[in-house]
Image 1 (cartoon, helix red, strand yellow):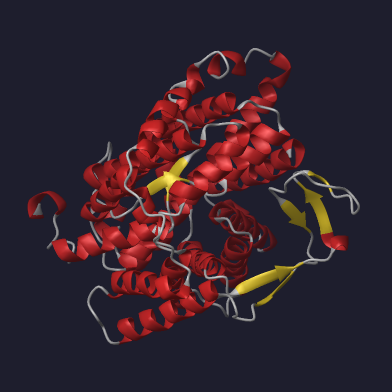
Image 2: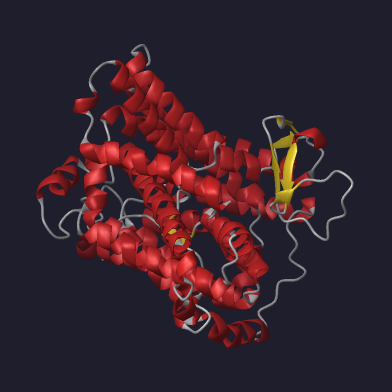
Length: 486
């Protein structure tokens, strides 16, 4: 194990990697329950999506750990699953089988741009100041996810600011048979809650406990805080253990339903019908493009942000990235592992599988090698049989971890020269849009766009890397595409 994962070389050990694997799993285990609830709205069998989520996460994460030897986990991406359901299926009228076919093609496209080193070239083209901004911005993003998960903040919007409900224009006196999405304008107001919610109280206890353990340099502080907060949640009424059962009936039903989604992307209602209507081919291509762009830059942002902060991708890796051919550097292998996971997930029946920013929780707990990923993958597989046990860990126990990891990652901001507006403006928009726009790729887009604007104003646009220029243009085109298709 030492020889395969090179633990000593990476300054870690087996126990630390195992703790980190558990930490990453608990930080992102919510996806095995959230993803089915979102995708099943399209008509997909919920239990089948449950299994597809676990299988795609386990396979993608195993490939990441065993092939790339880095502590990143993969699973169907939040945001991408909402785009799959509410935009691609509901708004654009694709069947869920066709949507899976679109995701599969997106995966093939990502494999192509990885093998041809387009992804790698994109990373090399990003200025160091923007890389640090992306790292700090991911810290804001992660902390924001933690604050939301802890129910510490709430949002208020009166009906004059509501733009749409269920992707349809809002009508004040209308009756809605179930609400799955509400879009409001800038009139929404964030505020602290009144802390009467037991889940919020539990999250605050977990946050204070974690801070104390970290300041005291307690080994395994993150995992200890998750377990302790979960146990404290039982008398709080937040954690319900009464329904925990290891009955085999649930997973038997899930496996029978998996046959419905497995390979559905290639059936008569999927790939075979996707290009049958010539008038919809431009829409098909634009949707694949929107899927791929978001997936690609989410992954790149996660690698740059967490890799620079933790040293997972060393200077040697960076040099190998620029000079090597094939898959000799960790970054090469990690990008390839991420690329193949999307197509694998589509085969089983789920939306884009991508590298999770919550991997930062395990990295924050000391994870430095693929052993962390292997542990996380095995825990995902175990959920096939013990999903009720994994499900009792509340977001109130994992959210404090994300908040503190966000604090740690924001140290990258110190490497930005904030007194130089040429650096400060792109860095600000990149990091702030990432958190408030709730999207890594949108934050990167904002940074790229304002970086180009600054260079144009300075008469230095020729100095901008061609890939950065093309990426910025593609981002602008993507925003136009989304405006058209939504």
